[in-house]
Image (tube, rainbow, N blue to C red; front, side):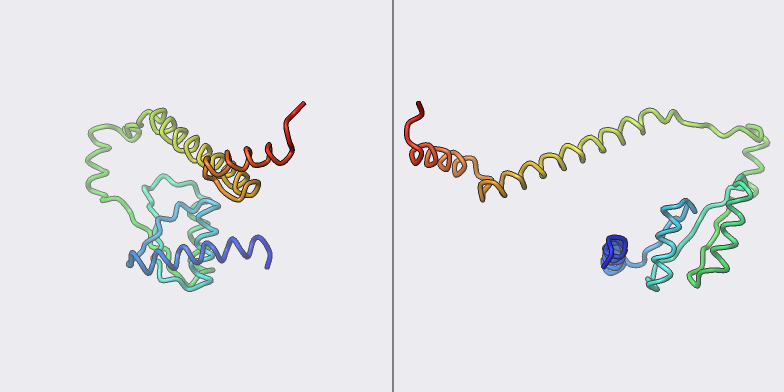
Amino acid sequence: MSDVQQKIEQVVAVLTETVRDFAPVAFANSLGAEDMVLTDIIDRYQLPIEMFSLDAGRLPQETYDLMQTVRKRYKTPLRIYFPNVKQVEAYVAEHGVNGVVYSNPLPHVLILTAIVVGVATLAVGLAIAVRIREAFGTVEAEEIESLGRLESTQTGPSA
């Protein structure tokens, strides 16, 4: 089995487990590359996962074209949700067409960076623990120390 097929099988297993434990499951599809991979897997393996996307009326034409392609290609429907028109009109009347308030992304970026650093640190720690276990057959400090003492008594005093 290829690496790609193994990864697909792992994704299918996670999605199947998610459906089993948390049904009903819905997938918020942004129509990005990674979401299209999940769309293909959900449809190909006929997983009972609803897919939806949001259309605030400001998407590029390519996104609408992709929505149409998804609709034609896959059996699993992609539901499109729209904002309440009257609420949007009232908001635009009060704040203008570009009255959307954008938040400062920096705090989110810092939080995500902290998460990534934490996961990376954990991965390095686990890799070190695996290497120690491979080298000594244990990760217990006392056992490793006793192995070191045992080794030094077997080789005799150092010169």
